[in-house]
Length: 274
Image 1: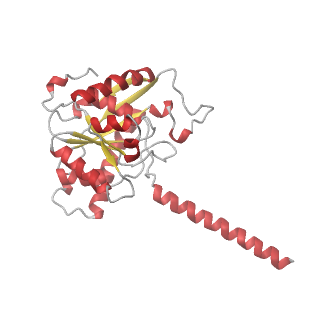
Image 2: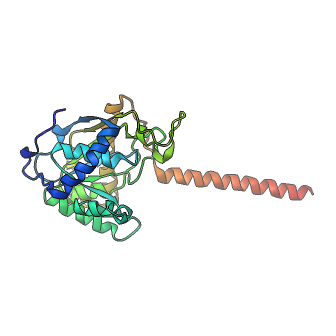
Image 3: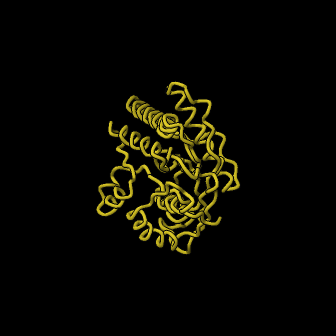
């Protein structure tokens, strides 16, 4: 798709540090990625909005940021607070207005307040609703966390589903290259698709109390929209059930308990036989 002109956006505030970061990062990204950028027509030209993105490689933020930067609407990305303590990287994240997320902390609420303020001021704020790299065996989006739905319903801003596919070929999640691949597969360049879909219809939730059920339902609608964009990219049908990390952990714990019980029973039987 042809690149849209930055001048066509009334609030495309890049600033010195954002442009400086682009000068540093974009050449490296271009050396690794054959970009296939799609769906910019779905991004609002003005006003705040939320980009909800799938996550299957540690380099996803760099690839997504390149796509979003070239769209003419620079993103403010919610990132792990630990990244902000890394020398130079943390400096650049702060200078470009990215938003730290303090996990397992009451400060997590501050990230949502910052996101709400950014959206209300007309900016693009990006979420990874899954909160981490997907654990789905086939890299489909798993269940999402409710933060993105909460910010969307509190601001009334449109949520644009975004999916990318191909970065996992460069750096597979959790180093699981498989098929004889190494952990890092930097060359030759890999084709990476980043695409946006139409805004998620959350109108049925507007005006409702933000109960846990409303947030779960709105979050699932957002994840369904992201999955649909990814399915179009991949040309495949997604699984009928979404991978749930908590349910998977519960099943693993139950299986471990059963194994422990069987082992204890075998030991007891052995003692009785003596």
